[in-house]
Length: 141
Image 1 (cartoon, rainbow, N blue to C red):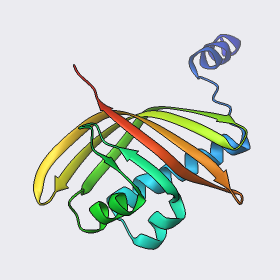
Image 2: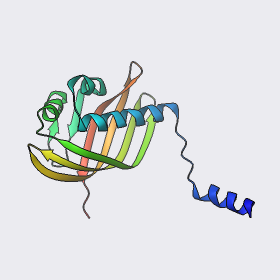
Image 3: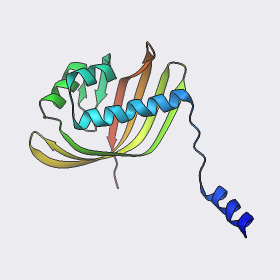
Image 4: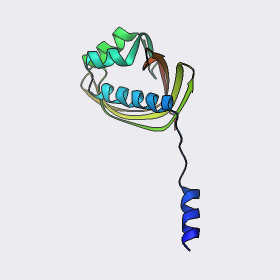
């Protein structure tokens, strides 16, 4: 009986092994998620590259300055963000992350929501993972 229970629990629990770099990228993604909700310039500067290209699901593309300004002036205002179905792949000093972003927003004081599929491209600079590019697309049900 004990052996049967043990074997069942092994079969049901997925094994998720991440490399050290994958774990570091996951931490960077989490730091970005928090910074999108509660932005400050120093944190955003540390998380994104000067060459950032940030694509929104509506086709709008921002550089670093526009991305940061929109968050800081609340024209882009995330109230909550949940990330699910995240996958991370590291190739040298570059990593890509895909996930589903579900959020409540208050852009420019107007309540809303988002349900997006997101691709993030991260680069490792001086030992730190920083966001180089992001593209989101709306999930059509």
